[in-house]
Image 1 (cartoon, rainbow, N blue to C red):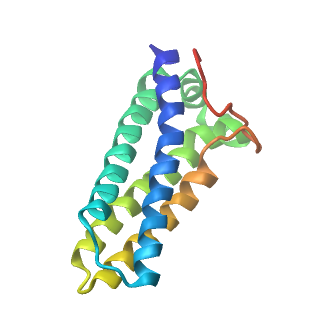
Image 2 (image 1 turned 90 degrees about the vertical axis):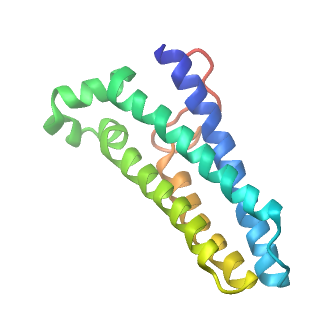
Length: 155
């Protein structure tokens, strides 16, 4: 089960990154071109929210149930905090991802509350960009200190 969940989590990492990026590009276009907010803009925000929520639920299961990395970290949390990779997966990654999810949800709500279409686009662009920064910094990529492949197939 762990390998399957990790593979899906890896695929969703890419999907999440691309969907949030697409929502940002659409919001920036709308903001700077001063175009009306469309049902497609709303759908992109909804899709981004759905994908980050699905990623969160799967990540939570990995964190609390299946991951040998977090089990190792939790067995001696003090020692794990001294080991950068264990600390990253036990604390830093989950905190940054929860922050990104919060920003996506806040951005979607803030956009709804915008008085004008330009304000709605601007709010989406700002909140989603901040979320994307957290996603990019907090996720393990093929380059970086906690290298992981683009897609983990079979664990």
